[in-house]
Length: 473
Ligand SMILES: Cc1cc2nc3c(=O)[nH]c(=O)nc-3n(C[C@H](O)[C@H](O)[C@H](O)COP(=O)(O)O)c2cc1C
Image (cartoon, rainbow, N blue to C red; front, side):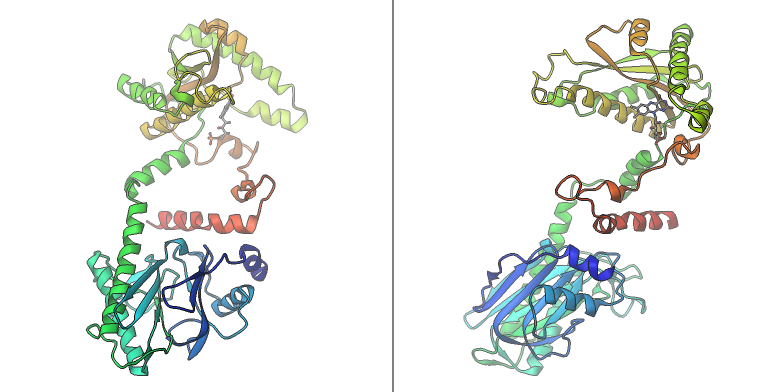
């Protein structure tokens, strides 16, 4: 199963691009970064695969998911290398960092060129000397440094020190801290490769103030700075954690409510916020086709309830046997119990929006109204107000009762009120009518019908991790 998964999710790499050091090339996609050299590079590395190698033409940095189980990294890297057509010994690393954010930095002086190819994953920052020993988790800073020079063995070790110091400095400068205290000096599984072409004059020193060390330090520091900046930029518009949790809570804890209404009235300011939330829904061409009929009058609600009762009886007759008796046991409306009923309508004839977006899809007016309903539903959950949608109604009778003109569509009939409880799951699920479908089976890749439960499972695996950590907090 593991093998199948690896093979299926891998693809051939795209074209490789020549780097600023002649004979050295870079190929990358979202799955793998590959540095390839026409001539063997002399290497020293802490890589998972090929850490003992002295010479190689291939350096690979492979992406793994955050939930990667770390059981057989060498096997997985070998598999990917084989797929890339690498038959010789290679140096291989892994990272959960996004490879499209890999930084490729070139630094040169009159003597030599240094290229840093750095991926920055900072999910598990540590402070060396502070963080206690613990199990490794993916979330890694991987640095590949290609140096166009001959280097002594001591210079290579020197280069590792310089690159590491530059990395740590960039992290500290950006204010990154580790969970056990102290500034982050890196992550628990950072890896480095120093690869030299062994051309030109011999370099003996690569400390931070040696010419080549200065290039290495600058390249690594810039790479980390850029990566951290890119990460921040990408998230600059996102809500704070607390705000996001609030939004997702409204989404996950929203329920269709038909029972447990209390008689507590909904204050005008709360109702106003709900209507205004609805009014801020997206709409095609900004046509805002919605209108809201607030229904509190007992007589009107009784009429609507009667319409529901006959429609519900007719609906029940469409089922047989056990399904019918289950249907009859369901409570499918709270028209009389809820203090406010609200009918959300859609005027498809409104000139607002000048028809934009509707020539091709006229039904988008209705879709827009449904977006308004969902806005109201979520806002209501945040306000502690239960909402139940009743569609078991004869539309013509509803129109007549509420005097809705023919060109206006009654989209949603809603029952609103404070409730003594919100179910943790849909009522229809609890009562055994229907279950939530597994999301992985509903995701198609590139074309309809191309579901891939393994790939979708991988895509969705962070949700369970997020939920677990939320449960713990
Ligand atoms: C368009 C629409 C019409 C609905 N009509 C009814 C209805 O007539 N009676 C009812 O009990 N629930 C109705 N529901 C609520 C669904 O049964 C409910 O959303 C679903 O079971 C999932 O439960 P949840 O909303 O609590 O997550 C409707 C929902 C939608 C979106």
